Image (tube, rainbow, N blue to C red; front, side, top):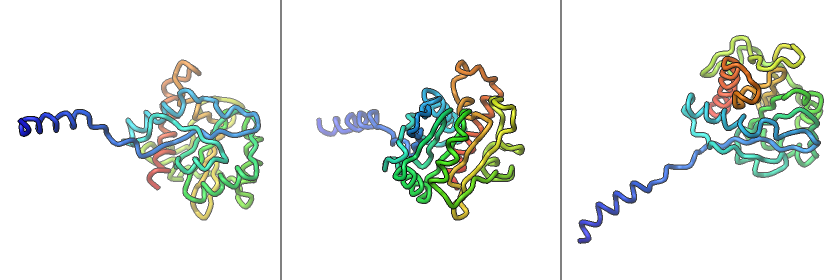
Length: 219
């Protein structure tokens, strides 16, 4: 009787096998100052995660995290995304925590959702007073991952009708922060009915986002 039960128990154990949890997690950065850090929160990162898992073969947790600038939990996320339209304020402790996270190997993507630029620049100086934002050349690997962007960032929303710019903070030869301006990648990642963007623009935005993810997780 015991011998007959063993194959049955083995089959049941296989049927109830739970695949390993995703090894990679990304998060939305929560900050102070009154700006809407939660902009695009519902669908933007989840859609990008789904696109990357389908097109890059990544195993990113489909549930985005939310992490505060000054929290030690930020070390659980190798990629952190920041967006919004308004004010941003980092305390001294938050700036130090973010700096230590980035130096230790973390990566921050800031996407100006229109109106953040004048506020985020002085806060980045708190984090890296010795560094200046520099425009990345179109030959930079971030534009040349699975998807090629020979002319740099795609233009998703018009805003001030200026060309999109990809800026970076480079610490000891490593890109630790990528700042996308005048493009609105995060809006392009959202569900199509939210901003009514064309499928072409949404695809470009998702592909550029996938390049960011691939660059961070394979460099």
